[in-house]
Every structure is written in C-alpha cells, then in structure tokens.
Amino acid sequence: MENFIALRNILNNIEQFEWSNALFLPEDETWDLDTKGAVIDPDDVEDDSEEVPKFARENNLQYALDIQTIKGIIKNAFLQKVECTDDDLFEAFLYYYDNDAFIVIN
Image (cartoon, rainbow, N blue to C red):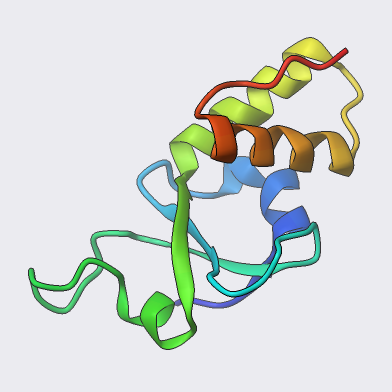
C-alpha cells in the first residue's frame, strides 16, 4: 500500500524498506527533511509503456533513487561519522543525488 512518508523518516528507517523499491519525491518542490515522498516498487506499472508507477504519477512524484543506493549512502555516512544527525543524512542523500558519488564528511 502506497502512502506518504517524510524524507526524515525514510532516511532514519531505511533498513525497513525492501532493496528492490525506490524513493519517489515531489517533482515541483525543493526537498527538505519534511518533504513527503513514497517508497514504492518502480516496476509496479500497469503496462509496459508506463515508466512511472501509478501512485507516483497521480501524485506528481519523480524517481529519486533506489532503496539499495540510499542504504549505501546511509551506511557510508555512518562509517565516516558515528553519530550522524538528520541533517548529515540529508546532506549525504542530496550530495549523492546531485553528484552520483558519496559525500566526504569532515
């Protein structure tokens, strides 16, 4: 069942999501920790001509990253800084999204 979840909760509870799912976030807004997104199966389309799941399409959500990648981002952040804050995790997520590379936390 699809529902909206705050990005903060997704990042802090990433292990509860299936690796095969993906994060979809709003197309038309600047993302922050309180942005509501959805974790859904990217292959859950009604027919092969559709590229975006119905829930994402109907709610103006775009594909952000797959859950397996986000798990790697979070793991990498905690390897660099044992006590990561929500802001640290969000910064690491955005850095990866923009650069397709892990952030270096100082």
